[in-house]
Amino acid sequence: MSRNKVKVTQLRRIFSYAVFAAAVLLLPVRAGAATNEHAAIVIQSDADFTNCACVTSGAGTTANPFIIGPWSITNVDGDAVFIDGTNLTKSFVLWNLTVAGNSGPTQRGIALLNINPTGVQNIVAEVMGTQTSIQTANIGILVEFSSYVILDGGGENPNGAGIGNAGAGTINKHASGAIDIENSSYITVKGWQLSASGGNHQPDWMTLDPAVNFWGIGGVRMFGVSYALIDHNAVNNCTDVSFTLFNSSHNTLSNNTADYPFTTNFVLTDGSAYNLLSGNVAGTADFIGYLVADPLPGTATLAAFGPTHDNTLTGNISHSDGPTGNEVKAGIVPSFIGDYVVLNGTYGNQIINNQSWSSMAVPGFAWAQAVPNSGTPIGVDTAPPVLGCNVTASEGGGGVGNLNGNIWKGNTFHTIESCLPPQ
Image 1 (cartoon, rainbow, N blue to C red):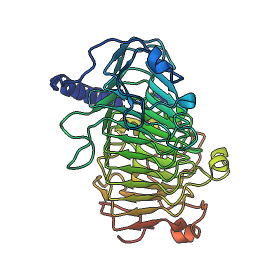
Image 2 (cartoon, one colour):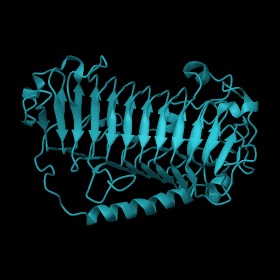
Image 3 (cartoon, helix red, strand yellow):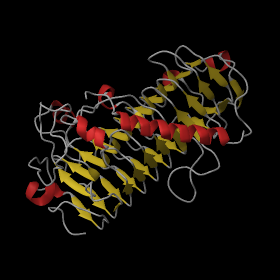
Image 4 (cartoon, one colour):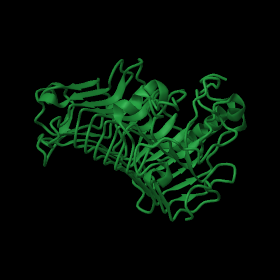
């Protein structure tokens, strides 16, 4: 098999889509949903808030932002909402928008560019509302070269991880992925249901190239992002990965739930440092629940982004991970799999007080290194066997003899690699 997902995985996703669709059909109609049609909205100057005929209330101040919505924007050939904040002085909230039926390979449901581009919060910029529904574009929401943007689906679970039962904004069925955050800081993403989004890719396991043609966007993708908060979101069936951090530092991912990615639920790589993952519940990843990784030594990505280091994973849960038999037969399962995998030369990471509920078939906690192999469909050694404790690369932390300064402590599991310390 080449780079296509195997049939068993596809069938599993089809079943999950059906369950999700049935649940959506049973939801009651809630007050405040968009009922009025509107053309695509483009705002690039303060005057455009008047020209768009889209503002329903507000004064444009930080205390009383312009409210845009609720509107229904459908069948747009391009972006449904495009806002470039380079010259904006007015604050705004996109409220309970319904976006659906867009067509074309590059369009976004909502694109927010250059919002507070200097890194200082001059305006309020928010996407809000439990009635927000962004469906069937290429990317649900793009935030780029921006700071202090809030994306709030309103569905935070007050009693645990993920979303509650009272409804949440939805971002579903996007060809590449749900939320893409690029070269931005101080972004908040909370309370969303993200489902059935993402493409069909085979990750580059050797160089961990962050390009979307290898990983897609999946649920939430972060590239060049700092000081963001990703909290209380529910990601389901977003391929190839639920949450990715590439070259991103000082971010917090907390109390999210994630299930059924093709490869991995959480990935931290390509120079990502000082991130905190706490209270997340992830399961049913085909290969890995949580992956903290450096590219292999000598790769262009390691030279470009530097090492991944000093990340903390604490109080997280991973369960029911592992490949299907067809994936193993097709030779697309990397030899490093598990609930929590620290890969290659990454250093100084803390994996503490986490839980692994997987069976004996997948290691609960693993320290491993990819082995290049041009004879496999994925360019590295494949499973079986599952490799562990084979690390020779080190980017810091006192070297391999000191486990590269990585710390495993207080974790619970069925299995753990023999070279890792007792918990």
